[in-house]
Image (cartoon, rainbow, N blue to C red; front, side):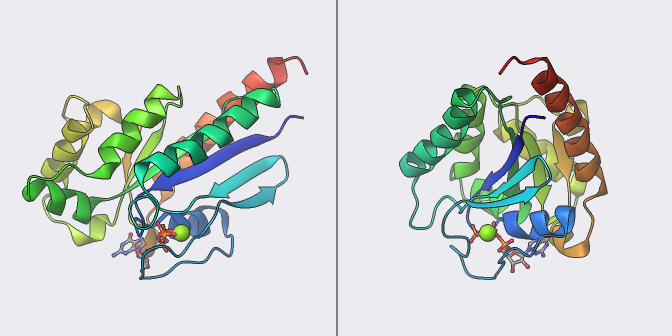
Length: 191
Ligand SMILES: Nc1nc2c(ncn2[C@@H]2O[C@H](COP(=O)(O)OP(=O)(O)OP(=O)(O)O)[C@@H](O)[C@H]2O)c(=O)[nH]1
Ligand SMILES: [Mg+2]
């Protein structure tokens, strides 16, 4: 059986490592400071490879992030594996604060990059416990990412979560559904 990879991307401190810990019970390093995860950390679970990536925005700019993503995606092509599943973690609070201040969150560039790389990402909007008016906030976030609101139109791609509150059930479901599809693609690929 071919390996299937799932990688987690996002701005530093968005909660990538916390989400991985919640979803897979893995011992990832998490922390309140930025730049906790320093390099791609791979965890193998049978034929599933979970990749915890460093965050974008602190020490690591968009350019170096892109080349890290390109390496992961191209190595799956070279190994004749299905394209990895990408899960983008967004810190809802910080995203909304940035657009309030008329700044463009790096999450938008990252999302566009993933689409350009032909990875159809799952977008997990994390730290929902820190924001009010969930529906309106999620609508703002998806429209900034270039998707038409309401966000509920995108339930096969966008999912609100709160990793710290152990609220990741919908994300777990979405990921397992996508991984199943990738497994089927893998089985149909010739070596
Ligand atoms: N309030 C709240 N805090 C969260 C949530 N998820 C993660 N955090 C906190 O956010 C901080 C960063 O979490 P990490 O999982 O280390 O974030 P990361 O994206 O892996 O960060 P880097 O590896 O530095 O890029 C930690 O203090 C977590 O406890 C959440 O759902 N709600
Ligand atoms: Mg981390």
